[in-house]
Image (cartoon, rainbow, N blue to C red):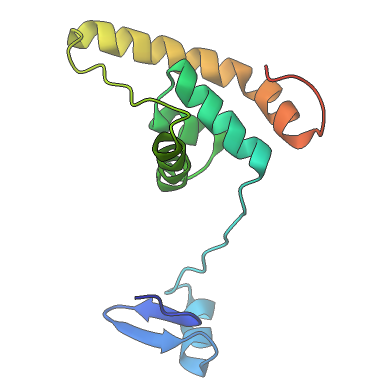
Length: 126
């Protein structure tokens, strides 16, 4: 159930236009969410990085997005069939950790190139 124009305070829902909500917002007791839309190129970047083998947590950390947003985008791509599910559960733990660490550092070093590609209108994928 969605509450459009409503805010959850404790266990109660109050209208965002009410004076009570404005007072709670001024005191810092209610957090206001800012939704930043995901561009099509950004979606493509997330899907490409997931195809390469980066984890959802690493992609979210590198781009400063919520893991739930990244997961939703990747889940749609999996349902369409453009990505197959990745499972590394049978690899030894040490190998998983080493590979995970290496991929994270490589991704963080490539972030400026990815950001440039996302913000531009032309060019090839890095």
